[in-house]
Image (cartoon, rainbow, N blue to C red):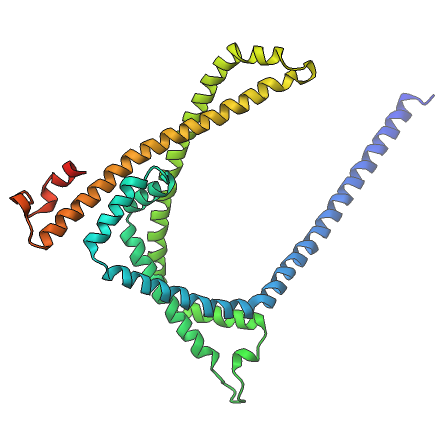
Length: 306
């Protein structure tokens, strides 16, 4: 047997060797990790270079079509009788608000957040995009060296992306873009906040319903089901009962939320339709019974009708 001194010597030596191996392995991992990151970045750059030209061609072709179609659709909407459109919107809110509670809640949140600013913001972004696209078309025809071939067809995808990025940075109006994005993000956050609060309330209600139901079911129904279930499957009974109670709780909570949304959207839709009807009569110089006032904003008739 070795003496305690020899044992201590071997123990210390073994610990130093293990520590040295750990440090060397850690350095090895650090040195191999950096090349791996460089390889991943180079792969991303190669992929961007490959898809650069097709992507720019696709954007240059599709984006003008989308912008032009949207502008034509909005112009067509502006030509429609405003009062008739408002009546139709109010009736849709009134009779279909309970079918799509999330959609109508998002619309209401957008209206409170300032949906008109979003319309102006989208218009500004579309105008800036069209300016950039027009300048890009002009740039595609530039032949600086005069060899009869456009410069964009003589450079690789990387140089083309840098060229188009520089074009965007020099031709776009950053102040307009910043203002438009700020307006859109403001309304978007309003919608997200309203939907989050609404569905958090729905989830809390579903949990309360399922927990209350589970207590009653576990006391009066679960024992009967367990007695009729084979012994090897009895441990599944509480779990399955809990799933069923949660499903029923979610269904009831969603139904209650749909009813609440139906009532609120029906009131809002009725008010929109009633105001549009009164304005329609006023614009046609029709005042049956003389009950339509000159200033529709100071009357409660539309509220009473809704």
